Length: 136
Figure 1 (cartoon, one colour):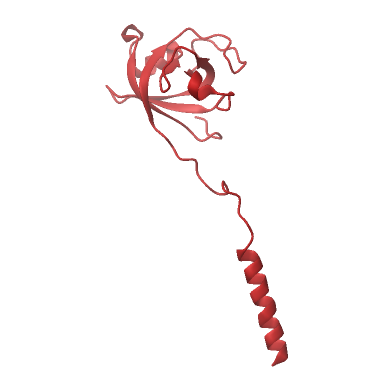
Figure 2 (spheres, helix red, strand yellow; figure 1 turned 120 degrees about the vertical axis):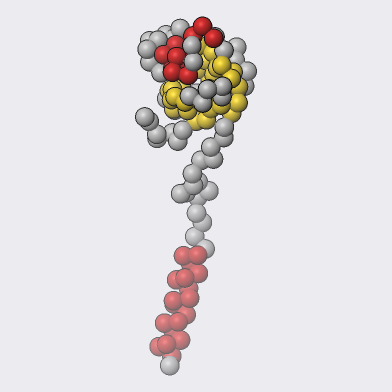
């Protein structure tokens, strides 16, 4: 009987130690997707704040200075939707837009054209960041 008691005590200690092990807050957690609403405009791209040089045919996004912060979103993809026609496209964050409102995006001409006409100049958009590891 004493072997059973010792075994049971060890088993309980093992279970308690496993259950008591702290788990990092971000372990196996998905990032919450926040959809932003703002204005979409276009610009001629070049050397961006992220340190990369792009051309107008690249699908590039410049985010507001408020969100850009220290550049932690550089190279992260963004899904943008034109709320007027429902068209969606993806662009890569490569620049900062100092003149944009907090949730506005400035897009390369090629990305803007996937959503609407350059002649329009401004689109009402919804957008969100994709997971940092995601790419089209």
